[in-house]
Length: 158
Image (cartoon, rainbow, N blue to C red; front, side):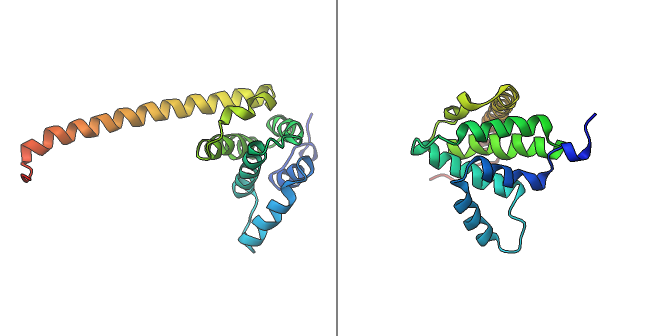
């Protein structure tokens, strides 16, 4: 039976990533300096990690990736519910979002993912695919309503 001492807590997460990826230390220190007395960990910290991993991937400096993604896998297994959510949404979804907006193919990271990480990654992709399709449908409905209502209420002629 697991005790609370065996379970990874949220305050353990960033120190574990610093050990797994030593090049993250300077980024983390800058991040903490920017946030000052505010809490810089949690989702803000994993966001900083995601940006750093994107930068490393862009430079093809992937030496720490096996340790980082082994850690993500471990967090999904041995973390509290909050830590598991942080690993999924903070790290994995953070990577997907930052990569997508940085010109880096998010799937660059897939080979390093363990079984639970791959499941979470795939589920995130499916969830976002559903959301994108729903948003696309909503956009079409709004455009259709605009075409129907505009003539009915009269639009100023150009």
